[in-house]
Image (cartoon, rainbow, N blue to C red):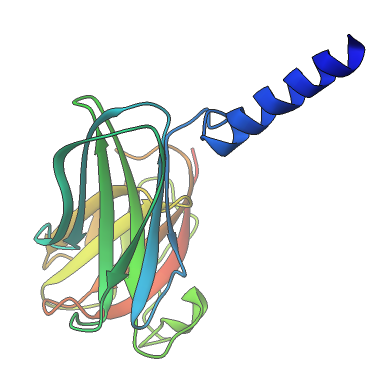
Length: 197
């Protein structure tokens, strides 16, 4: 009887792990990141739901649509995002789950950089003060797009402006990644910033 219970428990555990029932949270990941030619978009959904998966440019333009209001069963999914025809820059992968939940990850496409620290076209272009309590100064003239993400890659602020000062009053205290893009979408600088109370 004890062996029968152990066998039944083993079979149930195998079925649970093998069919994805052990997944407890919806998730979205992009790897490798940064990437030069293509990257993998991986997402998990806990239960069957209506899914929309899109890739956007830093300017909000839809680059690719992989799922549009498609009903998918709970499980793990992998999609190859080919960026060979795209310019270097920052892109956002957004996964809508049902009508109330969405996950966003930043994907950086660059021709040669293999690490985020390599993406600094102008090392003298440093955002200051850092850390800051409210405002930052960007020593760069002309129109630029500033994208701020949290450390998990979720976009928290995006603005296109010709101003040199940017208010961070709408952000909570913490660490962020600030990216500056040209009007053509190429990266000028990626810098970690910290907002304090």
